[in-house]
Image 1 (tube, rainbow, N blue to C red):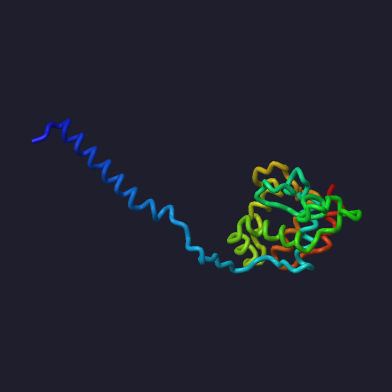
Image 2: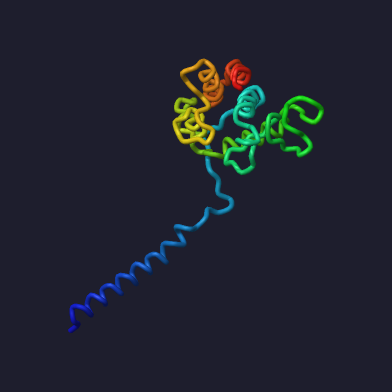
Amino acid sequence: MRSPRAQLLHTTVLASFVALATALTLSPAACSIPPSAATITLAALPSETATEWNPVEQYLDHRCGGLDCHGDLQRNLIIYGCEGLRLDPNDVPGCVGPNSPPTTPAEYAATYRSLVALEPVVMSEVVAAGGQEPDLLTFVRKARGEEAHKGGTLIDLTTQVGIDQDDCITSWLSGGTNTNACTLAVELTP
């Protein structure tokens, strides 16, 4: 017969062994990665056509694409365009002049991929629902000041400019970009 102290030690060692064995058995499954052929099925994505996406990208480039903001390769959302980060190292920011051509189709596409890649499943759900809940997306919440953002609140919904900025983005998510709102957002935003 074991003493109470020996019994406690035996129970502790046995419990530790069971916990270790369980952890070793389950850890490969918990740390496994999906097979390389695995895909995420997305119900819908916002339009990337030039008439729908380009006005939105122009607003994002103008408002958020500066080299000290999302025109920086270190950011999770990277915005390319003539007002900031360029894909071609020979192009300079500025949107005017021979060395600063307008935003290129490749830059529009790169910004689109960067934005959609932030939350592809959530983006798909918002678009599939006709853009009804855009605040499910982090980039919308941050721009509206609903979530911490280094750049602060960028879309102030108490002003007409803020309403136009918000409509530019949310109309794109709903499948019908309000190009007038995007144009006003660029023209009226410093």
